[in-house]
Length: 93
Image (cartoon, rainbow, N blue to C red; front, side):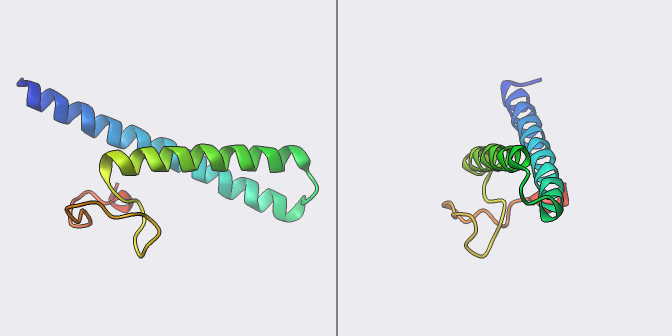
């Protein structure tokens, strides 16, 4: 296999690994959000929510700098050239 093929495979693997990590953290955030709706004074859960939100934001910035935007309509910065035409889009994975 050529070096280009290996590099493309590694990049594709990193794409899916980062996206999976983001999805896991965002799932935790949804669950913590629901929990905190009924337990608003649970300080440990609030700390866990904030820590997880920070981790999610960090991974999203890392993903977007390597692979392009995760969200459209101004929620993510655009790169040159315009990359929304590139697939797979995050919600297609």
